[in-house]
Image 1 (tube, helix red, strand yellow):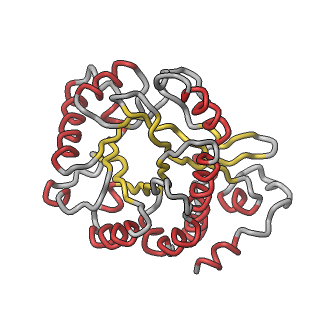
Image 2: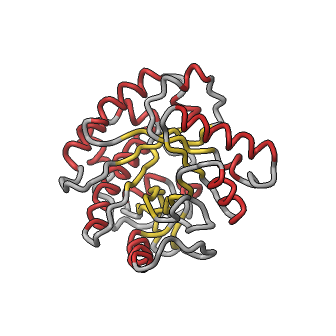
Length: 281
């Protein structure tokens, strides 16, 4: 299965562009337009860079960088599996590039639940993971609404990943309305607060209450909490005040190419922490 997926999109580089102008995931993989951008993850207490989430992009030869909203719609399962394998392997290699510059960040990637079942992820990690002693492992993010219905899969995969210093994170937490009984069974290291709750959490009483509840759950179950989509200093201050561990969003930095991330990390390593900014990408 692994070899078949690797061969499926390995011979299309240099092919002509689609004549109808539509870009599909198959085009991206076949023509080697695939690229990972990284959005920094910030420790909200120290304001230091502690990790980054890998996000899929396509670098089109004439249209520039394309978001996944352009090329993912309509993608088949086999293509999504091939993409997921490429994402994992690329993130592992990118960590080595970052480490070569003295930067050991814990990276995270998004993984559909189907890939946890159908891809030999432990084999990929065994063959492709960095051998450096300071490799902090890889976080694989799965959405709550996908994984919550089959906790046996989550637990089995989590056990296999731990052998390679990798963990699962529960993405978009709060959107799936999980019961507390199910939460006790979750084998995750992080809860990522759904961005719809983060927006205006400083002024919206309901959003603030939901964020506080999720952060408290994280503390009770010894899980880190990560707030996505932070866009204002007020939201950041609110989340810091209630004890949220990590934040990411346009307030700190937009997703960026690996080379740009290296440059920013170098510059900030000489300072005291992360400067909030409006245009990091």
